[in-house]
Length: 139
Image 1: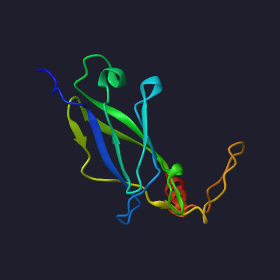
Image 2: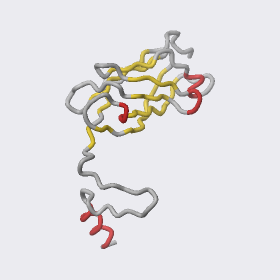
Image 3: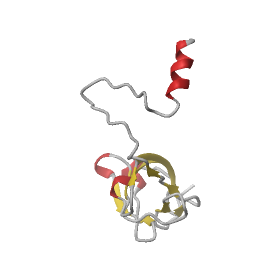
Image 4: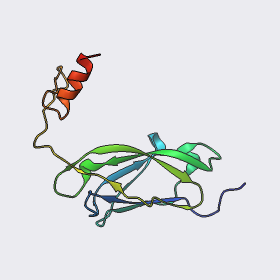
C-alpha cells in the first residue's frame, strides 16, 4: 500500500499542569544528524513540518516510533521544568496530531537534595526513603 501523498507533520501542545500553554520548550524529534528541532510557541503549541521518515527511520518507512526529547530547561515560564524523552508514533503522509498535550509539571527545586556526581550520595531526604530502606532491609 503506498503512503498518503501529503506532507508528514507532527502537532502537539505543551502544558504546565494547570492547562496553561508552556512556551519556549525545545523539542528534538529523532536522533543523530537526521534529528529535527523546533520550539513551542507562546501558547505552547509546536509543529514539525515536512518530516522525512526515510531520513528519521530508514528508507521506505511508512510508520515509525520515534524519540521526542522534550527539553523543559528552555521553557519561558516561571519555575524549573524537567527534560524528558517520549516516544511518538508517526505515520507518513498525514498530519499526526497528539490529542493529549505533553504536560511538564514545575519541579520543586527549593527542597531538592544537592548531588555531587563525583561522590557517592545517600538520598536520605527523598520522599519514600524510609519505605524503600525498610523494604530492602527485609529482603
